[in-house]
Length: 288
Ligand SMILES: NC(=O)c1ccc[n+]([C@@H]2O[C@H](COP(=O)([O-])OP(=O)(O)OC[C@H]3O[C@@H](n4cnc5c(N)ncnc54)[C@H](OP(=O)(O)O)[C@@H]3O)[C@@H](O)[C@H]2O)c1
Image 1: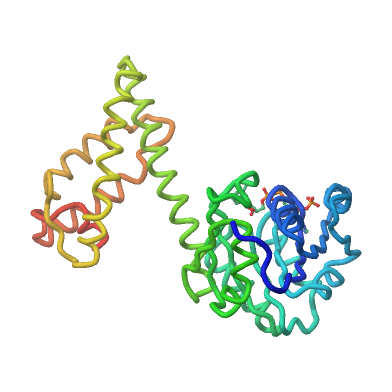
Image 2: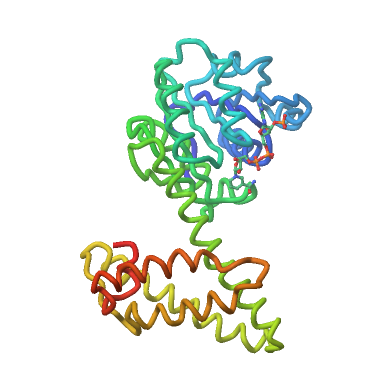
């Protein structure tokens, strides 16, 4: 993580919860003027003791700053805070640093840019203690100009990665990555639950399950290449063979607490492709 830039940005951190505090402490340590505002004032006391400037209102915090982080719980909180900024925000960059949806990012970007400021949406691939270390990645989308202008400051917090000019790009990327994790982790949990219910030794089973997960990781490049080329070689099984296994799995998971993980929809899609004469293709054809 880099040191202070040529001219230290005056930064406002709106929301000094876990992420906001980590951001503010990191910027203070690198010599930036950091103005803080938090709905519950007492939650910013330690930061003020560490050198942050307390603001009496969001408006006051933003007035003093060229770079504003909205490190808030959710979009509802972002909206409530933005509603208090009915002022000219020219020359400023506002960073929406919260976990939200694509449409929320578009609305936030519209609100901010209509007041003359640049907007960056941030997807936080980090926990608070990772902020300011090389293990954190924060995804940004929106104004490329603002990203370049504040790259040094953003680089203090994490490895910053600009993922697109569409304001929602970081939210989509962030949520899609969460989706990868949930699908893999819940797939593992379903398998372990099924094995345990059948009296199978789950420790023994989990070793083979690990190997199975590693096959998914190993196949990432070829899967992407198939998507890009729109060609779907069958690989170890074609769609007709997949459908048989999918039906067995749906039956096996019928009474399980976590449900079938959407396999019924997948099977319907595979059936439609087979009916279309594409039964000899591979699984990637389902998203073709
Ligand atoms: N923590 C993580 O590991 C992590 C990782 C990745 C992403 N994120 C995302 O980062 C965002 C912040 O997370 P966090 O862990 O910092 O949450 P947090 O510790 O609960 O802090 C939430 C902040 O939002 C403020 N807030 C909530 N509702 C508000 C409202 N209506 N008006 C004004 N301020 C409001 C809170 O103020 P009060 O103190 O007054 O309640 C607090 O400052 C979330 O979107 C979260 O999903 C967190």
